Structure formats: structure tokens, C-alpha cells
Image (tube, rainbow, N blue to C red; front, side, top):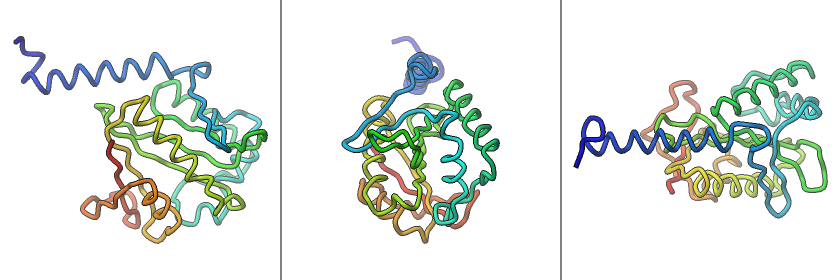
Length: 201
């Protein structure tokens, strides 16, 4: 058998990785082909300019950001810039960011993402945020279930990981509910308070 670059297995793995990334870029790198996901109560689609005020609220609300270290949005203009930058990242094949909406209502109530893809496209990080008034209703659990199904069965990720604050009990609980396990040997170099969770296909 011909050597596929380096040793056979690693060369073959690199070829599969390249093909996987090419598939990703060809199928999901435009607004028209962005995957819209639906569950029993939710529709998850692209953030648009009309979402700016809701996005600003989501990324500035104290109860939402209590355990999250991110750049906060302070104006509608900053929110518009944020939305535009995320669109650009989608077009570059860097991430998915879905706006979470209740079916029949166009208002953005949260966001959920797959990002930080590994070079071989086997691993992605799950991120999620939800306005406080919608906490405790099972909404984020429903969104996570839908995105996990897409990540594993459509994008063929082998592992999805999540980083959450060690004291964020609701976040830890929803990850545990969906089969994630805490990996105490792994540390988040950027935030010592975070715990890292993994879910394998």
C-alpha cells in the first residue's frame, strides 16, 4: 500500500481531516446554507440586525453573565458590530452561532454555538447563553440536545466539550443531563475557575 504522507495512518487521517473541512466549507459557509435547527418549542437560526437590542441585553445582563468572562455589549451599535463579526466568522468556517427563538416569536432569547474546532475537525466547543427570564424552563436543555445531534450526526464531530464555571450549578446540571463528564485533569489556562466537560460520540 502506498504511503499517504508520513506513516500511512497519520497521512490518511490528514486526508480525512482535509475532506471534512472542505465539506464543512462547501455546505455551511454562506448565509443561504446556514443550518436552521428546530426542536419542539425552538427555532435556531442566524442573528440579524433586528436582534441587536436583544443581543445587547443578552450580553450585558448581570444574571446571565455572572459566571461568564466575556466582553460585554453596552450599546446597540456594539451589538450590531458583534453580529456582523460573527457572520464573518461563519463565512470563514470558524464557528456556528445560532440565535435561539421560541417558535412563532421572532425575538432572540439566547444563543448557542459550536466553535473552537480542532485542526482535524474532530472536536468542537459548545457555548450557550439564555436570558434570565427564560431560565428554569428546559429551554437550554432542548437547544443543547438539538445542537448536539447536529454536531455529532451532521458534522461528524467525535467529541464536543464545554467550559463552565465551577460554581455555575445550573450549567453543570444541564451538561450532566446530556451525558457530559467532568474532566478534572484538564485545566482551562485562560480561566482557572472553569471546569472542562467532554461528551464523546
